[in-house]
Image 1 (spheres, helix red, strand yellow):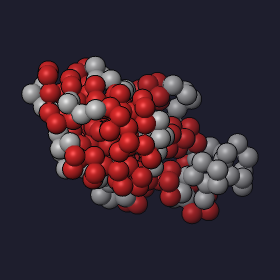
Image 2: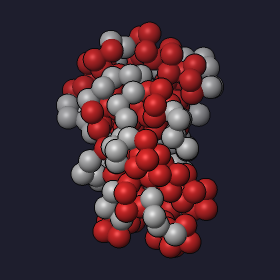
Image 3: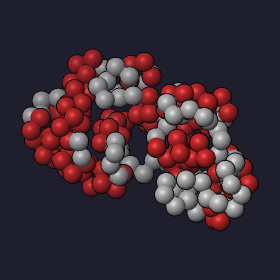
Image 4: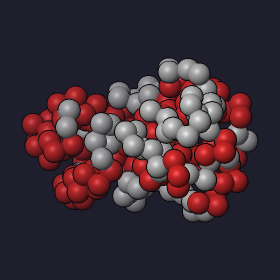
Length: 206
């Protein structure tokens, strides 16, 4: 499976636009239940007004909400992003920490977000980021029987070599968007079909 996914996506990377780990952290928080394309439309203005944690820590929450409104759930996202800015500024000298334990202390940051930031921002393979695409593809391929993202992550970490943990997330996300879609998976075009334990031969998985 890894060989097939690597051949399809030889240079995997996140679709979020960012210039440094702080921008990546904010973008990933905004991407919850929102498309990467929409986030990439919002972040240029956000980072123009508040380039880093120091500037954002002093921002008014109403102004921040207005900027990120189109990303959805903007009340909660603004509260978390503002709290993250204050933590980064007050506790980490305006930097994003490089450990899982420290990142999980940031408001609105769970393992998925932390894994993405650690790998894409610092090249650290701390785990496998599990979003809806990774969870769906993993289930359809029989790689996990769990629904809890933390348990799905543990299963994937046991299967794939550590040096591939960050890349397997990106490859499964892209594969989930391009081929193994939620509603209408394109099974005839799927290079992984021979590995897929379909419930009924000749029928697509739901």
